[in-house]
Image 1 (cartoon, rainbow, N blue to C red):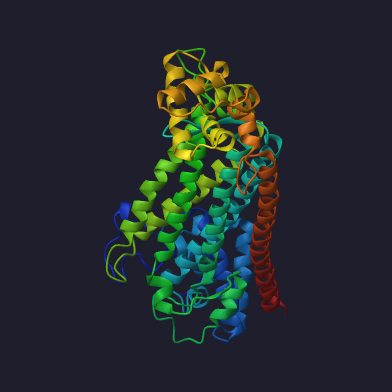
Image 2: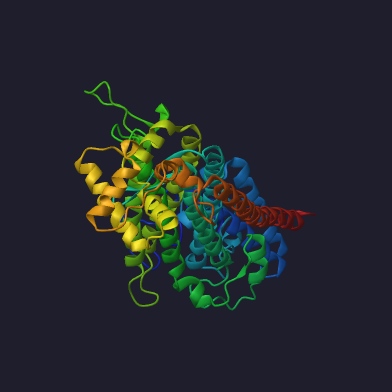
Length: 500
């Protein structure tokens, strides 16, 4: 067949089918591929190189195909493929339209829509994972910077929505760095299973052509080919794992946004967001709404719906769910991109966040959050057992609340009266010991053990976390280098085929 711009592909009416698909069932349109077109294009080139190198394609045919794919790039690859249409097979469409079926129709030898879309799916996921790891590294770095600056910024910690014990803003920052570090570890672990090549597996049995799957894998930057052709195409636990990894990351992001959202309210007033992350009201001119945080929380909620979509798509016997995966890949691509955008937004938000340290300190000491250390002082200085000391302090706090005595106004004698209520000998703490036990700043400074909020402990944690972050950055750099080196090898291999 000669070249023809009228070629519309193997799925048109007149071959196996007699009718064109309904418009909403025409899944094979280039406009539906989004950024995965880059993975498809790379696979077209790598497959053509491999077919030529192993002699499946005559060298002249391989040269013609690869030269045409290079021309496509000079015309604008995405535009050229959109014009050729054919969805994932737009490369073949373009080649047949420009070179004829006798040449262009050979590109698909030994290949299926199955491995074609699965390669593109993995390449797209890989790009998203790299972007997410980059964004996570930036957020983690900012959190560690904030922890260094705010190691003395005392604030209340919360359990059950109530003041629990004094901590620091730095302790909160390093907590989230720890969680985001685990998110990064999950992504890096996932990357090990993701970066395996399904190329050459076709639709489940591979091919009787002597394909070099290792060569195609190397040219596409994968670590190795998947070792089982049916598993490569028809097992999709990878998508379910990715959905879980992304959903957990989204919940981390949503929890951090929830904290800042709460703390930015008028009642808490512990932080204030930069205006560019906020909106206002059409009727209430005084409003400053934390829209950026609400957007992060919304994505966290949406990710749970995506999780169900991905899992439900895989319900069925092996080889039955096929078209449903288009929904899975679409929501996973959306979630990967969406999370990256929010994380890239979070780093500058945290950098420019106004932290109201005076307000935090005032709240830290205003609601008896330091009472744990008052019980400890009784044990230490009066020799009472812990449970009895705990009970004495519980009565002391209740009596002070009933008498409208603020923590700053309470005295050692109030504690002695509480002990007497229980028939316990008065602790008789000195004024200095009582004051030290009731000071939220000293409460924090006394906590120097591993993982504690004391400034000394926090700085140790920051140093350790920076080392861990550097290791993750090195791992990402190595993954990226492999992809970039593979792209270079692919272009060099094309040059070798095209050489006279």
